[in-house]
Length: 342
Image (cartoon, rainbow, N blue to C red; front, side, top):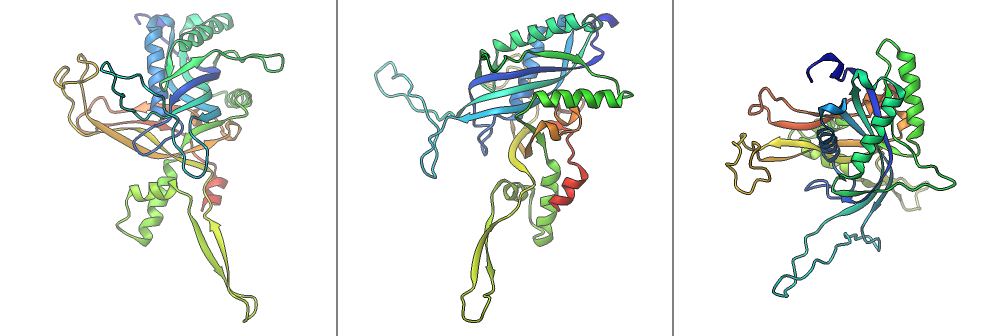
């Protein structure tokens, strides 16, 4: 962008509400399944911005995800569950094609973007037009491999429309708070995904008090499971047998194991030097998944927009030294919640 008028410098928040996604990818990493990985949504943000181009007058920096509906395509009989798989056509010689396990889920989402717009989109009419264009572009894209379906409206429920609002500057604290509370009410009922890296570090510290060889993987697995233990209560009188009660350990809210990015396994390879790469004109690198802990929390319990946004982060100055590509979220639990977790 060549001049100041075409440089996005007015902070804004873009909301694309009630997006129906069909058959999104439910296998988010080699060790987790369920809701799509947050990297799928940061990738969507990048793809949407590239599709619009710099001439659109908007830049996207972070994305928040609020889930209103989740329908995993799995069998629900008994304790063992399995994905509902599709039958692929036979091969050219008439033999049966191999079945590749694919997990799918239907979603109802609201996507919230941390954005900036140019001077040309300061007016209400211009921002409304731009928001409609963004929603139209998104309707022709994939979200975590799933198809975007048309919204449903009825006499009872009106179809929610996209919005693009300017965010007050930091000096207008009360105005920012009012705007966030108003937006959060629109996202109800639903749950927002936030980062809880602090829980992982706390659990690792706790485990190392008992075992110095405990690793971050041990802490992650310990947080990811439901732990039920038998507690023996002494008899009320000498003749009665001891009473045993099964108690489930408390959890710090609705916490879930999530993939948050990738860590490098090799140096950056020159374009075209790795056979089978998807793009022969882009540098290539072997990576593995990075996991952390997330929490589903109602939007009305958040305090600010930054609590919602996930931002992709890496160090472009030293890609061979660090090699960490991960998504970060600025959510911090309130002090009273930390006391309850202790």
